Amino acid sequence: MARAGGISNPVNVGIAVQADWENREFISNISLNVRRLFEFLLQFEATTKSKLASLNEKLDVLERKLEVLEVQVSSATTNPSVFN
Image 1: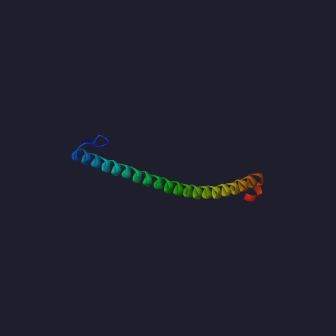
Image 2 (image 1 turned 90 degrees about the horizontal axis):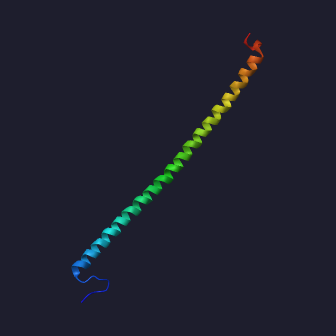
Image 3 (image 1 turned 90 degrees about the vertical axis):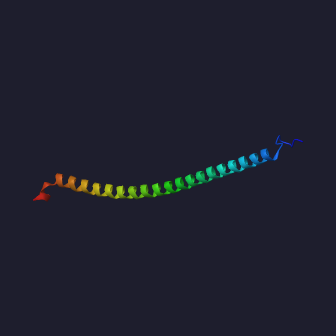
């Protein structure tokens, strides 16, 4: 007597159950790895943004210092008596 779905004996049922568990395990592993990758990318983005913000602040400070030096050089070249 055949069962619904075309599985007719206990061996075929066992094979189908085993294949189902293997597929579920594979899908679970893929899902876990995708989740880990997503978490890594979120952490990487946050770290990168933080480091870029820090570098931006340092560049801003350097730009302000450069502007001050440019003004000092400009005023020194227009007024050479500063060197005497």
